[in-house]
Amino acid sequence: MAVAEERGLDVDVVLYMKTPPDRATLQWLASILEDPVEDLVRKDYNFRKLGLVADDYVGNPTAVVDLLEQRKALLQRPVVVRGDRAIVGRPKTRVASFLAD
Image 1 (cartoon, rainbow, N blue to C red):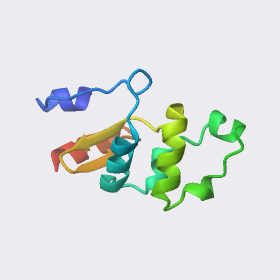
Image 2 (image 1 turned 90 degrees about the vertical axis):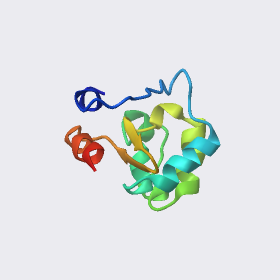
Image 3 (image 1 turned 30 degrees about the horizontal axis):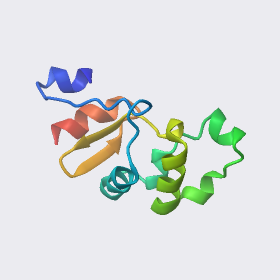
Image 4 (image 1 turned 90 degrees about the horizontal axis):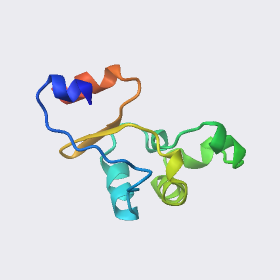
């Protein structure tokens, strides 16, 4: 957010745990994401604890959307959207160049 504010851009912040994206929104994000779709999934302790396999999500938007629809905490964040483009904002340094385009 700080990068957007520095550039004078209005931003909408979605608190995904309180207002999780619905299936249609997840599908839209997957379709406009400039990163590999599997990057939308956090491969953290919870991912491993569930016994999930990262390769199952590579290039598989349906599997990613199915997972994130059921396990909202696994959504990688932040997801930065500008128009009809989106990126995973990690590392943070990617956000400035994305917003500059």
